[in-house]
Image (cartoon, rainbow, N blue to C red; front, side):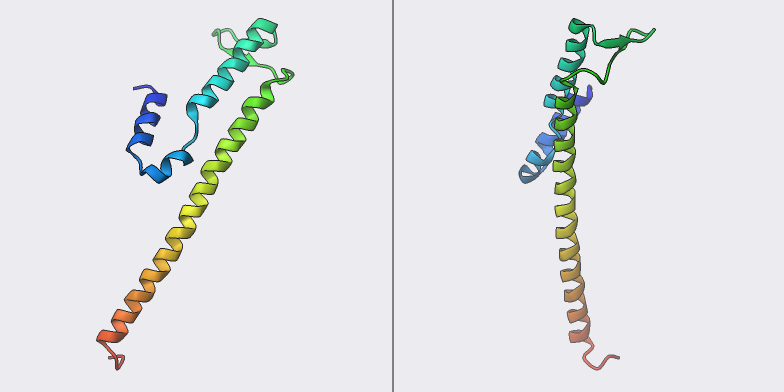
Length: 110
C-alpha cells in the first residue's frame, strides 16, 4: 500500500477531532510535484544519473512548498503540544485522586 493511501486510512480511522491535525500529505505532494514539473518546463532543475529530478534553489516557487510544509509541521506540532498538556493535566488529576483514595482508606497514615 502506498504511503498516501495508508495515511488516508489512518486519518479515517482516527478520532474525528484529531483528523484536521494530520499533515495534508496530498496538498504537499501536489505542491512539490508542481515545483518539480515547473523546473522541467523552465529548465531550472538538475537531473542525476538515475533520472531523479532535483529542483534547484533559484526557482521562485520553491518557497510555496517550503511555506506549506512549515505550516503543516507547525500544525502537527501544536496539536501534539496541546495533547501533551492535556494528558499531563489528566495525569496530575488522577494522581491527586489516587492520593485522596489512599488517605481515605488509611486515615491514620498506617
